[in-house]
Length: 284
Image 1 (cartoon, one colour):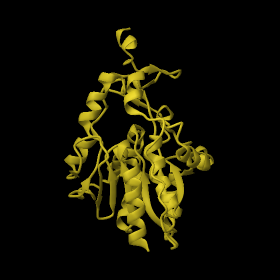
Image 2 (cartoon, one colour):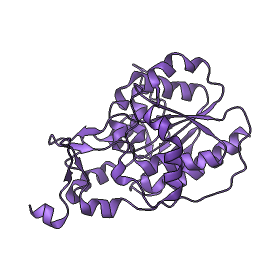
Image 3 (cartoon, one colour):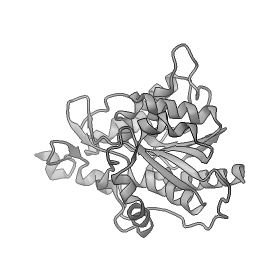
């Protein structure tokens, strides 16, 4: 009751999950993003497609048993896509089994015309994405038109995706076939199924931005999360030899070889610019 009065109690949803508290929403979300509308010299080559792996799961079970209402963070997904679209790239949208994409709609920037525009443009693909399992079995043999793999962040990227063998197959495929791989925040959880028995982690020794565990541990205090995380992402990345490029959940971005990464939702615009500029430079 005291937490409710102070505005730090997570909000109970109709399905029994919890979304962030009033205070957490005030501190951690925005009505309008910091997207910069840049006129890029559009890419004209053959590698125009970006494969985007979204989560189809919503509820994350925390250590205390509470369910966090999550999904992909809309700004983390759509700002990089806006930059890549403006640079001349197209998207192939997939989820592990072809179920609809799940977004953290409580974080949607409702006063942002650019984000709303690309969301509405791609809405049918979000509602009926392609099945990653089918893609990994068939389309993988016809991928000459693909430039990059993008895994958006949001806590939902840690649901199902880190255990999905087809996600691992695509991460390895992208790495072995010289695609760029783009991710931010919790999206790097998608790299875990790429691990092969008795093999070195493909990103061991790389500099990578990952959302800090230290921030995730603090957010239950203001009701952003309804409990402590089920497992620690940045700690796990470090245990496999990744060099963390950020200490805070800030706007840090990093390019290391073919890996482009960002630290948090605050890095979404910077990540989009870095990805667009890098792909245009390397592919033209």
